[in-house]
Figure 1 (spheres, helix red, strand yellow):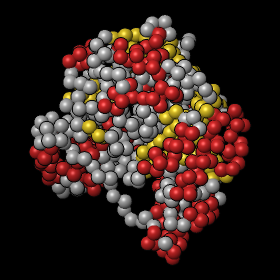
Figure 2: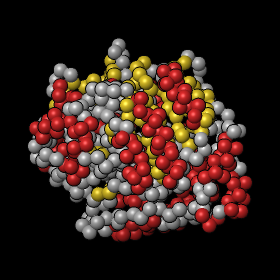
Figure 3: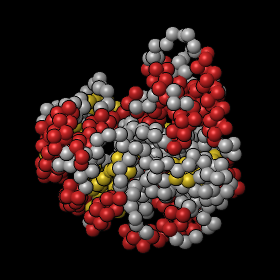
Figure 4: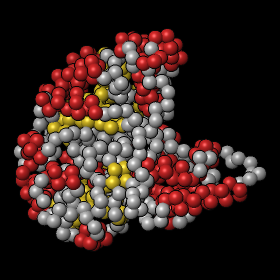
Length: 469
Length: 123
């Protein structure tokens, strides 16, 4: 997300004056109401579950927080199905909703063991990434790549293909060297390239459909400090520089700021420099300032663009040094819905230009930055990064805003460019689409059926994805 | 899980009212420092486990925008809404607060107890 030492649009009074003169009636000024919420309990007294953004809901008959693998295995054998494991509820797709049993691994957290010589560590699947970063730092290790948000659980993040950014860095599941899971029969299996090798390739990004992953072995790196640099530059310059930029930096991404023609480029590179004092995070203030600009001037894209560029021209680049786990993943209190597709790298820039043109031509209400990242390939069967260097494009919508444009405008462009959807983010793909995108999809579906013939882990959505139980 | 939410909310409200009476006439405590906030835990071991797994990540981090544990001033406007409203907001989510507050096996009683813990200044 965009970072600045001070809020983007401190002088919003001037913007308000312009809006007052020209477009008050067409603006969105005022308190935006919360989206309608479903009842807190259903007729049977079952408590509401909602995902982080609020669009996925369920009233599970039972909720369980097992404290051991044995407890979990017993639960899988006896609890009302379907059983769905929830990490932090950050998926926007209906992976979690179940009328049966909702399982959290919040009581199975922390490091189990580690090997200093190989920089590997075994962690419980319920460990949240923020806690894992701190725990690994305590043993001199780090995950070299992390996603933007630090709340996900390890098992939930890897089950959906959560990723960071960097041309030489695979997504989180790409650094899993072994895992342990509880199958639909309640068996506890260890998997790696030698033991249950096919299950390993399917389950390390397994959507919770092959079993509930309890332990993960990670190939980490020695703990390092990184230097983060953030600067603004025109979109045209960033797109022209993108091949050079992603070769030059360990972690790199950029955000296009809609209706500004400007991007925020964010890089992280290893350094021996001492840690700097970290200023208070202002990303969220900057984001809400972009929202204010939309609220006041959304009726006039030309004026919105002019005001944004004028204010941004005074912003200074930011440089921070700290351990990478402290900088790569962050607090994100502004909720949103999101669509992200993973495209062949060579298609990324063209697709992004089309997405920007479509949004700026038809959706003046969009203000959330559009994110571009790069991910190295891996070989997990259901990995969107399987077999190709990937350029990712993510489009967000504030949680109080409509997000239907993602399906209408954005998804067709992504699909035309060969995109594979992030498994946890909005998409409308069906089984046939996945089978066409993933060479081993049918093998994965068959293995899932063998591992869980009764469909203990299949909710309505996953039944549609695998369509075999 | 079968007790109606409204009854539980009433129970929470009564607890809150009791706490409010207990604080009558007392001077407002200054906000605790970051180290104190980070170290606070519920006395009940089970609640402490839930708090550490779910609440602590946001309610001890100023960047999260959540009211900080033990900071009575930040909690006061929330508590003034009444426990039933707070409980509804926790279950349904509001603003930056995701539904359920990242606790997926909590009962309404758990949420009420955790709210009461987080909203009290450290003793």
